[in-house]
Image 1: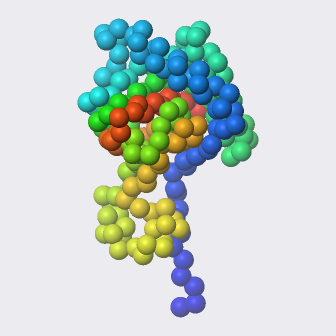
Image 2 (image 1 turned 90 degrees about the vertical axis):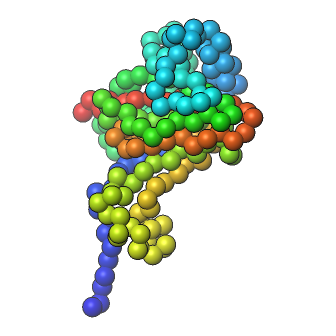
Length: 204
């Protein structure tokens, strides 16, 4: 045979970007906002979803709050720039957004985001060993034997691993299909890991 190809057809679209230098302009104020939000939110209003152990989940109504407007505008600017780089006439609206603060030993169990098309995370304050964002390959079960036996090079070239991990780096953002199972690993440090999570609905 003269030609053999492995074609990674029908992949899931993830968008990964660095929001700096724009992020530099709001970073300090954004971190301060997150801590003030936590301090001023009654325990009864904090949400308990995928967050586990020493992990705090803010209310998810931030988009409707006036004091969040500068960060909402920043988020829209970043998302729109990402979409414009990938295609034309991608129209969307933000559904909701919330802050996650994972202190030492905090983590988020495996979950999906229902009721929307895309979701995303922006790392506000984070560094090494504070909990990677790990996604599960949707085909792990149905294609288990194939995935187990592919060569390392093909796995790397075609992104055909059992899972894929993003390291939390302040100012970086990732957009992903909301139906993809993901989790945040344990924060092994004594410092807080702060992130903004959000959901997107595509309107056309």
